[in-house]
Amino acid sequence: MQNVFDLQSFRPAVNLSNPTIANISFTLYAVLGVNEKTQILTTFLWLRLYWNHEFLVWDPDECDGVTRISLPVKNLWSPDIIVYEFVDDDVSQACPYVYVNHTGHIRWDRMLRLVSACNLKIFSFPFDVQNCTFTFGSYMHTIRDVRVSPALTFTEMSGNSKRYLEASGEWELVDILGETSILQFGIDEWDIITFWVVIKRRPVLYVVNLLIPSSFLMLIDILSFYLPPHSVDRASFKMTLILGYTVFLLIMNDLLPSTANGTPIIGIYFSVCLALMVISLLETVIITNVLHNNSMKFQEVPHWVRVVVLKHIANLICYRWPEDISPPSIPPNDKPESLNGSGPSIPPVNQTPDQPPTNNAGTANMPELQQICQYLSDVHAHLTSLQKENELKDEWCHVGYVLDFLLFRIYLLLISCYALVIISMWCVWISQT
Image 1 (cartoon, rainbow, N blue to C red):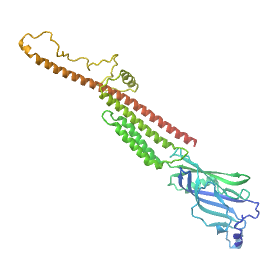
Image 2 (cartoon, helix red, strand yellow; image 1 turned 120 degrees about the vertical axis):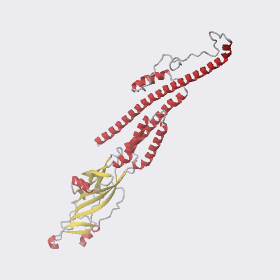
Image 3 (cartoon, rainbow, N blue to C red; image 1 turned 180 degrees about the vertical axis):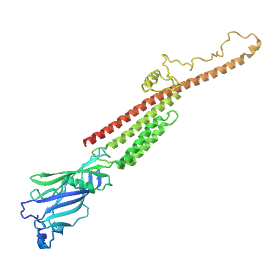
Image 4 (cartoon, one colour; image 1 turned 60 degrees about the vertical axis):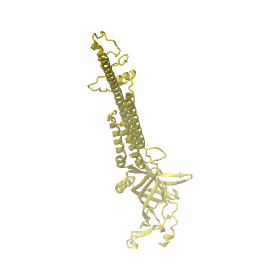
């Protein structure tokens, strides 16, 4: 046995022209982490290597029927099989022994904490599926010295990994595929096995913590259009909603992956939602300006506004007028008149009566009558002014309501188109994958 240990530095082959065949299989036990920013995948594997040691052969009949023994791996030659994608040292617990069969067949089971580089695509986060590559091969020995082959079929490896993979993590295994090939570098060739490990993210955490709260905030923003703009400060409500959404994005920023290659579609979704909220606030500012600013100045509604807004747009959006109010008519010439077009005709104070009084008592009461007429004229003018102001306020209110209905429907159309685009992009990506 010591003679075999002394040959530890040499490849165990009687004829060195015959390559040593190393059989490889592994079981994916856990996905420890996926770092999208550094493009690193951390996994834990149960790795199993088989090879044949031609110097360790004995007859079980001569050794009391012993067919298998365990020996320290450090005293035997072992193939230098590595994973080409590894980017960090293996810190897993070492297994110092191997099993040796009486035919010279060696089995080495070891645990491997593999930190490997992987091209992570996060566009469809949190519904993403990652395809990472594990390439096993010899580091120094070329194809003339060491050949590698799978110890199990790829289907069996995939089934074992699905059976033993911890199901409580964020990722679940979809499949393990693989093929054998030859790596050529210069004049040398290496035998390699390439495994494709396909894993899928469980999106429940992100749907509950990101998508559902964001959808609720967008729904509240849509429902805020039903607040009466003339009696409720809708702009303050929307500004508070935007502030809350911004704080929500800052808190949830750690859950979103970030890479230099691109932005996930969920990040675009949040940005567009914030932009839609800002557009909604601008719409509220416009309606508030129409309802308060113009109506408080008691300005006449322009003729083109009556034609475009109160007639054509109102008919286009099927605006329903209140039962006690009929749609305003469009006169050819807007002349200021009283509400009903008639009123008590009160002569001016300095108007001379048609028939002067004939007695002295009437002449004596003339100043008092003139003063009463003056008071009545002032009251009439004030009432007429109030009626005119109320007319202008009501007319500007209807202009604001029509514009509010129009902008609300445009806002709903934008949100619907945006939702269809997002759903279509996700469906196209899923069909491609």
